[in-house]
Length: 262
Image 1 (cartoon, rainbow, N blue to C red):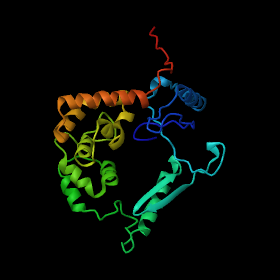
Image 2 (image 1 turned 60 degrees about the horizontal axis):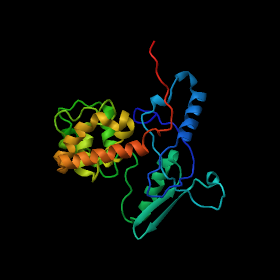
Image 3 (image 1 turned 180 degrees about the vertical axis):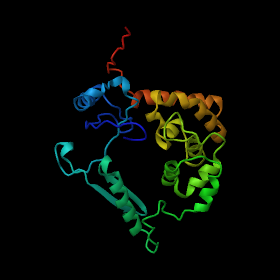
Image 4 (image 1 turned 60 degrees about the vertical axis):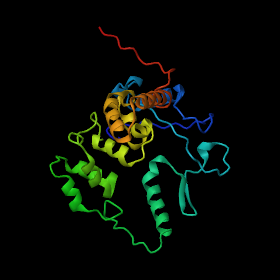
């Protein structure tokens, strides 16, 4: 379970294209995953028609000399290059432990800085009064408040203050709020539309057709906050749709079942 959807995976194949080429799932990988899904959850009746999106990545695996990449170590390694701390290796399912290890490593590079309160939800002290004040008049449940604090920390109050009327509503039934999209384009260095829909948020993965239904709203935000002209927006939308079709949708070779009405 993830963000109101379900992730199905994974596969492990060689990426034979240039590293600059976005990796994309193959028809063979789709068949492999759907066969496994049918074997375990056959009664669900799920087919490729139910797939919202796909995503692939190039995994950094530590080279320990194994001939088969699948046999290589899944350990992570951390190093410090003149203040630039890098972590590589590891596994997707170990992301929390890897993050904790990284924070411990960062702590060693910051001598004299007090340890944060392990019970706190943010690394820097939270101004609870400012957060509560920004919430005045907003009908957000406790789970959503905690989500905003967990994702934005001390900036959660700034996000709420930056929101416009109606922007504390969910985006197309997802856990995301329209206010989060505005905050992303204001404060999170969005350069291209793909940054907003695939990286700052995951709407391009969580909604059908790459989030086509939210593009009009995203256009308003990008033109207001980033000053995009109509021409710039159209270029960004075209590039985003092409990228999504190429790297985040089902490959053309996948045969979707045909629904026949009686």
